[in-house]
Image (tube, rainbow, N blue to C red; front, side, top):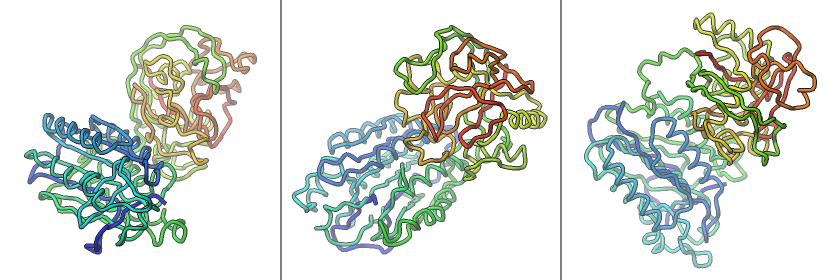
Length: 500
């Protein structure tokens, strides 16, 4: 169980709910297609006197990554803020918002409370005396949510979004009276409020994120072009289903999100929502400028197979931003061979090198292009992202960039949920291992030594092993090996490449 959300006075409004999202549009403006987007993201979990929370730091990191993908400049991403630091961050954010204009978004994940109908965000240094949380301390030592709203709406015009996951179970709140739940907020015309849980109930953890946050992230990732009212409503039924196993353990009732909106104009997180010209099978590619590099992993990377320090060069090429998904595969092949059939935005797996050649022929015929698998050298160059010395593709923080055996819960995850590398490529480390087109003839090479480029894009039907890279949900995040081209495995997928 995760939330503390107590009313320290008589409860108001029966429809008060745990997580709340406000969207405030300052009167009659058009959807912001090209306007600046600025965000402040805070996650408080390392509380000094209250129950420590593991979710907010993950929530903040994941929300920041999604907002960045959706065109937001996340000016500040911070965790575990005391009162003074919290207020300073809000003031810095509002100053940046006033200067840039456009869309502003504030996100907070952590403890929250209501005192006499006013909502407060709890800093990590809130004082607690024994088992008592003082009403006065909450009023004067916590951050008023109304203050944040007022600061953002002082400017004229622009769109303001405030997302609060601020209602977590806290044992030391037992001395407080009233039922759980936050009070409704009011703002300028065009306010949207989305709540994650009913009054008096708890919002359950779903693993890395809370149930509601996980489904919100999924919606932002897979349906950013959906009108915002529909997007928030779309998470209601999935959260209800996800919360069923928690009833009787950490939840008193099924978790039912709720949405209230007075939006005068449509708003979309994505910029290209009115006409989506991309076909369901069409990959999103990024252009990579060619260059030379040393084909070697860091010596501290214990999850690698040896590579010689050979300098290799690649020409300009394109590579897929994401691993090929089950939806893209089905749109071309008419079927889904994956073991984990959980959604169109999950990586396709359980496909052999030969299966992929059939897929490529059909895809290229439809699109009149020449997509292929990347060579091992292209894959590694793209993985590095122009940054030398990182243990994984884009970072030394494996949990930031990869789904692997220690955080995957034994399954694949939707593509693009982790942080991208400097080339804006996702899941280069972890999730599923990825086929390359590089052929290895010499049996000695199978002892995991790199001996330079060998037929980097072999397409002939042979039994020679192909290189696979990237690690997976079932193993470490960084793996290099060779696999028989007929192999199918639930941790083995691919991404596309194209010569320029």
